[in-house]
Image (cartoon, rainbow, N blue to C red):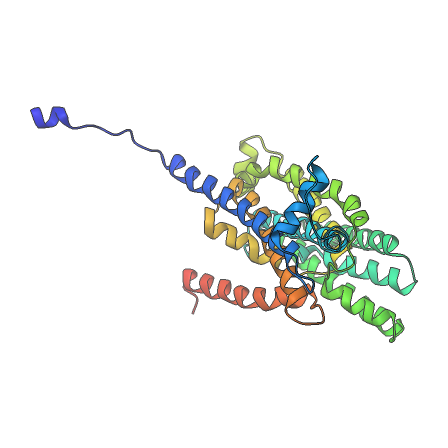
Length: 356
C-alpha cells in the first residue's frame, strides 16, 4: 500500500501536444536556416564580401550607427544580390505553397503547380513580349496575362464537356500545356536566332539575374495577399480530404473553397513565373519534404512548405552564381535535384501500394 501511495502519476500528454512541440521547433529551425542561407548568399559570389561587412552595411543603413565598411560592397549588395535574394524567397515560397495546395485539393501527391498550364501560358505571354520587342515590365505583364489565360482555358474545357471531375481537370491541363508548347515552338521558329531566340530560351529555363527592386514591388503585394488567404483557409484542405459528401455535411461549400484555393495558387504561380521564368520541380518536391518533416496535416504542411521553398531556391540561386563562370539557369539545377527525387517518390509509392 505504501509503495502504491508513493507512486507519482504523470499527466498524460495528448498526441496533439506531442505533434505541436516538434512542429514549432521545426519552424524555428527553418526560419534560422533561411536567415543563414540569405546571409551566405549575400556574402557569396564572384566578389566575396565578408559577413562582418554585410552586417555593417545593413546596420549603418537602417540604424543611427555609422560603422566602417567597404564602399564598393554596398552597390553589390543593394543592386545585384539583395533583389534576387528577395525574389528567390518570394518565388520559392510561392511555388512550394501553391504546390502543397494543389496536392491537397486534388488529393494527388504527384500534382505540380503547372498542371493547369500556368507555366506554359506564362511562357507564351513572355515570349510574345520578347518577340514584339517590349520592355521588361511589359514582358512580365504579358507573362501574367498568359498564365491566367491558360488557367481560364483549362477550367473551361471541363465545363464544355460537362464533366467537372478532378481527373478531367488534370487531363484538360495536359491538353492546354501541349497546345501551349506547340505555340511556343512557332514563336521560337519566328524569333530572331541571334537575339530573341537566346533570350526566350534562357527565360524558359528560369533565372533571377535580371530581377530589380521595381519587379519585386510589383509582385510583392500579390504574393503576400494570395499566400495569406491560403494560410488562413488551410484547415479547410484537411476537411476536403475527408471527401466532398463529408465536407458538405460539415457545412463547407466545397466548390467555392476549391475555386478560391485554385485561383490563389494559380496567382502565386503566375506571379512567380512572370519575374523568374519557368522553374520546375519546386512545387512538386518541396511539399513532400514538408510532409516528411511534419506529417500530412495541411495546417502544418503549408507553412513549412513556404519556408522550405524559400530556403531551397535561395540555395539553388547561390549555387547557380558560383558553380561556373557563366551563371547556370535555375531550371537546370532544380531539374537535376527534382527528377531523382520524383523517381524516389514513385518507387516509394509503388512499394507502399504493393504494385507488381
